[in-house]
Image (cartoon, rainbow, N blue to C red; front, side, top):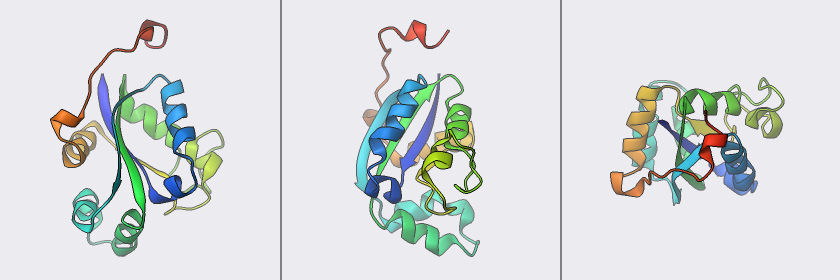
Length: 149
């Protein structure tokens, strides 16, 4: 099983889409391993988006992610990183395919509702940044043999 980080961003929380998006992830067969509602501080945001530090949009990105509460979580499942990225759709909601989360609910590049790790390596780094080992719960869902084969 693979783990990936998800962040349901301030626009997602403010638009009350958290339940809809978590429901889609669960319906796909992914398992929730951790969830917490937090107000992201600037230091954590800058660490998370460190690879974008020298880009012109960095300041706006930090202001956005710290602008309201987020639900940060870990989901697990076979190929979880790839599965979540495909479910999210293209970063720009205008370009995202209908049926994806961004394609159905976003029409913005910045206000694109959800972050998902872009590789297993990024997922490992991001999970360690946002969660302590004691906050992550591993368990098997009853009936999971009917979802994952």
